[in-house]
Image (tube, rainbow, N blue to C red; front, side, top):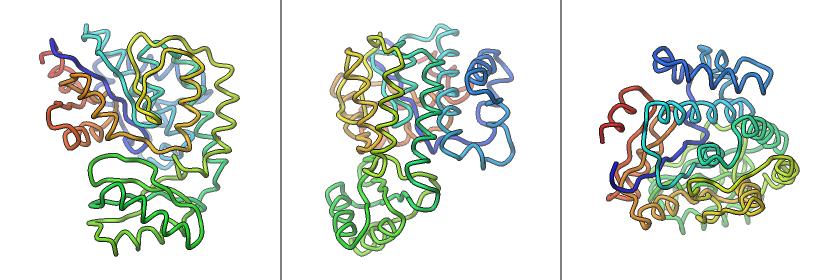
Length: 311
């Protein structure tokens, strides 16, 4: 990796039952990292991720520490095997916390505690069934925002939540308003508009009460200057000051994830290789559609890590 590189860390939606089981059989660092997280949480996180049913894993308060731990475990494996330190880090939503751990800005045990609380606050902010999220495919960003504004005028909260790729916007809000926006999106020519299996409407104004609670939690967490620049979701900026990082994490909760701009920022900084450090390959797929000049590869298994080591 003589060219500039970045590690990107996934958020909710990348979890699945049995994740990392194959690679965990070949190295102890995966299980060790999950054991460390379990000691903080007070329950067996690895056992939860390996359950046949993903019902508990898909509940936000469990999803968040599970994904953080999986991503950090793979990062540690990369380091253990002598992988080169990347030039930049970024994470999609929850993945931003994984990036900050990798940057040695937040201690892993503190991040585990933080994201478990974050997931709990998010679920408390909007009871199950009251909120919803949906993916709109085939509309440009402006039209997706317009669809939300029209639906909101008819009653209820619905806003753009994730600008994930060109022609792929996720919206969030109150369930009835999201349903209305889905119908309007179809009328506007969306190729597909469908609800997502998410237990909370992330990255919209309904999360402001959760953000206030998160701000109080963050006051008790030590944050150091990142050793590797981390590009934040909320404003596509990189910070060295602890208070600015705290503020970015709080604002992130009720503002949209600007993922298209994040990947383009990496490209603008001469990054030519991106490695997705976490279960699955969602971000690698998005990256290929956003920046044609940036090669994106997943590191979710032994083969992916071996291929990246050789590149």
